[in-house]
Length: 268
Image (cartoon, rainbow, N blue to C red; front, side, top):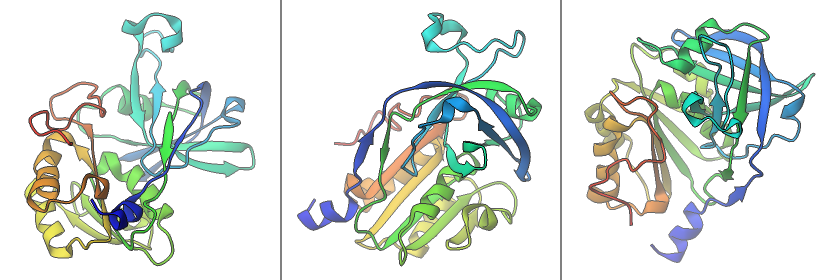
């Protein structure tokens, strides 16, 4: 990668103190046909920092039978119920609050089940983020490919884009996706496609990827493998120009998004 490319795609990393916080639900609303938003708040959110569009926090959920929230500090890892989520941070009259958006898919897991049953006052705990990466320093164009689970992050990428940056969101969602434009923001061009690799690749080919375009892709890891391979191998884009993150994987419970997307084809 050239010096010029390094400058274009540089994303400054800021590490944060890892803090475990007890919080509670302060509001519940449906923000899309299959998306429930829980707003969480509480005194322990004082000092919470999240500066990157790709940030995630760990949610520690109550046991659905006992209501007990177990965290790593409790020394009983088998009892911990946790999932990773994108925090949508904002300031309110009551201080810092975080919006958490849950995709309420068929056969919901622990997180979606919690969201569907949560009420004002429901308790949970959060940890993180460990660090934040800034918006790419010199890009003129941003392409985001995201399914429903990655829409919160997509909305952060759109919000963080510098004035003058062209933003395209390829939404790989179920249905007509009429809700996506309002969700991610009017400044982005939204293209809705079915949630499969072929459809996403066709749209990527249609919009094109210039030398100053950064591409962020997130969603079902099984769908992302051929997309990543196309970007990194077929188009030979440098690693710094592409970020691909599997938020979940078909048939895998509690998929670790830090796991290699394709162990047979690791990044350099």
